[in-house]
Image (cartoon, rainbow, N blue to C red; front, side, top):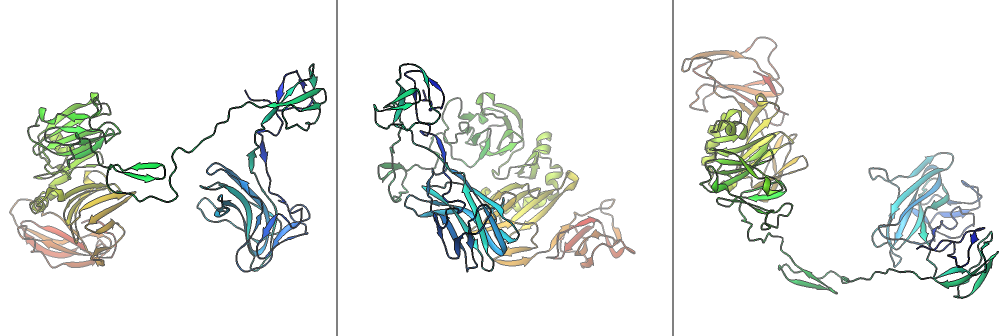
Length: 591
């Protein structure tokens, strides 16, 4: 039980024990000579600083910084003990500036050897330094609050001035520093014969065991304080310098009385299949392995063994599971497992007891990197083109819907030219609302602006093959060998070998029949609503993309006046727009 502190005018029974008022108390220790009223002492003055007998903010003394070249400080000689990461100090002062002179208060932190660790000055919420400056009559308050940094042993307060052309005046530099006073080794026992009252002021306590002091009607005798003192000792201490680290796994490095063991970062559980087909959901890692899908323990990807936590999904024992697993994907909160001819959709959970097969559909995915969640859908590549779960999954066949149909022929050509499935990548870029399917140095990009009527396909060509990609914050980065490109919709040039290359924007419609198939139709002219400079041409032979009219250059829309005459006759026609490179965003509204 804690021993109570002595109190004045209190009735104390015999054998009552107390401790002196100061023992273990929180003591505020103010900056010595904080208002300079003791004169020119207790402060170390840099160039230009003086302590003068002139009325300041309060009292008859102040500190002054006269015009001087550069920044100079006046600092308190006090050094108070602090605990790193714990002690928090607020320092403040009153300052008067006369023009362009500037001044600010600071807290300086020192290590155990007296070396300066850092000085904290006032800053705004954006980390910009704050000063007192300007020709303003009267004193203004400035304060700074900071916590003791690592290795800090003591702290002191200072003022930094810059008065190249004007004086700076300082007064009442204070802080809220406080410390716990040491707990006394002796306490005091009332030994008088009967209860009596203590005096009005605290007595001078004896420090020798057995000595007594009279306190009005109470006689106190110094006795030994029995208390439990907890001390900490270092069990393991690193050496004075960093050891030489080894890169060999499962070996030890000696560091004073510590032995550091090197551990590999790899998953070494023998039940981890280490395959390419991987998905992460329900706080687990799933991996395809022939006819099963092993999964890790919940929130522990290193553990693939613990029963009732880690385990596997028996893909091969369920519908369409006769062929090896080729890809994994995520559809909403469910796991999709593909082989070359079909997929199974599984409900998964942190608890394997809640796993259940939801559906099995004969639509395969031989390309394990092609699957990507897109908004509320799942998109992947088949041998026939790009398909989505919303269309192909619902129809149980390879219907394309609005996702893949417009570019199926182009995708098949690109697919035929790929020698390795590892080079086929897909991604969804939320920052632009785009799904990308990458074939080496070529990407087919679906831009989603709203509903299915507001989706459009583009083809991007790169100077070299794309190896990998990542999204950081809202930016997409693409890697090609040692090159890393950032995708930026604002830029109007491409990088090619370190050189900026202007590119044009091409918009080609599919060939339109305008009525009966095979019957020649005649185009008279056209109008376009668009921004920027562009050319218009008409393709007239759908068997040969090289046959089209001479491009006609236009700037802006053409609604004013008559239509632009462009007579063309053919069974089917194709409209082509090409926007000039480097001019701005492509923007057409209607044709």
